[in-house]
Length: 447
Image (tube, rainbow, N blue to C red):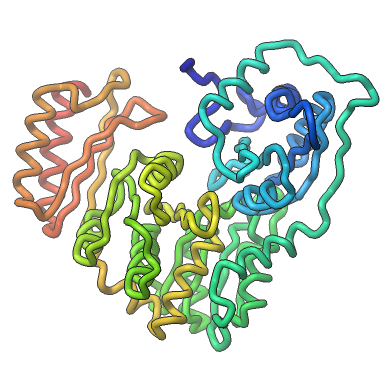
């Protein structure tokens, strides 16, 4: 299989006006997608949705023109969460779905993600096929074969109903006070509808997008305002989404932030206790060791994937399991959605709150996160640190110091010439010592 030139681990992303993030490239990308997704028979239709950043208008128009020139009809959703586009691609029986978003990045960035007709991330082979068309000259179909574009007006209502359908029909949030932080992003319309219609008393922040304020001091990457609002309003809990709505973090009534590892644990434990857990749980190399030990104590199988939601999905499919996720709050409930969905994941946590009659604070208390220290070492060129014999021996020796109560991880950054040195264990001083000693070895050998 060839090397991908434009696609990264999660589509195409970058700063507006640089590299592939230009109107000219998006026009060609729309045409190339049209060539790949076009079928000789049946309807040819691609759905486009976006988050709230200002450059979304620019790229929506360019992609629409490219797809039309390839003879493909376009359905425009406007600002909608990434998982909503995956869902609506399936329900509209579209050939593919396109998301214009740079997720949790600042407004200056933008990007493109794709979903197959089944609402799944594209296979590498299809991304390579799209790239092969990008190398060819754009050829417009005959005028009577051009694709038509149309806006879908009821997308929000359709997705709200889908979200509500992922929890028991008898479940109500009556009497629960919730603060929602929508990051001035793609969930700003949908999320308040969902939780209000389920009966919760809602307060909101981050629901006034202006094209420039997405993720700015709000959302799952900056939960400080949410913590303040939960404490100030006496809310039961707070929920923070990222810019495109595929990640979620939560805040308990004491103002303590729950990350993806803790939320995944609450969902898995509740399903196990109620006999609804099928298989095990997939985390990543960065999942807190405390979560792994908590799953082990519950008798729930646990596997680590490489960092990145596509690798979590690969293991879930391989083992036919339902639950996986990352500390960042990207949680996949495969029995409910085909991709990470912040609103759906939050609702799965609330099933536990509602069903067990316990607060979020109580539900997380049976999992103890271990102290974790992470330091970066800049190196001359990208390489696998464990290929160096001295480093490999040092890692083995340092891990032995934990006597089974901790772990060490060295990994190369996927984007920079850095080695990430991480350790976690139940003794904070020991963790810090282990990391410092390994940083010295890595620096001496390859820094």
